Length: 71
Image (cartoon, rainbow, N blue to C red; front, side):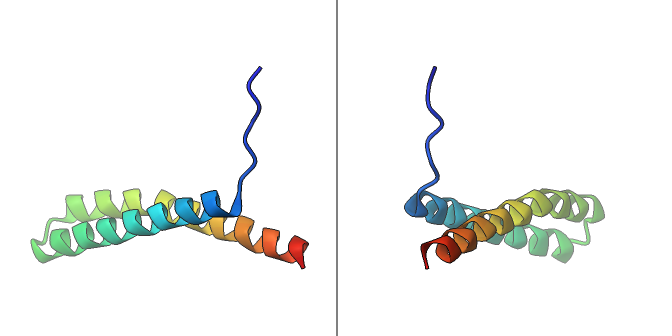
């Protein structure tokens, strides 16, 4: 039975960085969609942005929890 790897601080930071890049890319897509007045594409990118923001906030919460326990 494989072990579940512990979340290291470096791994969490890498996850946060990739989430941040995905958020930036999605925001750029949303700006393009709004510029063309395409409401369906704007709604689609907004729906795709929500889970990215949520995952970034979860990772930040884990990082803050680690720093509280370390101190």
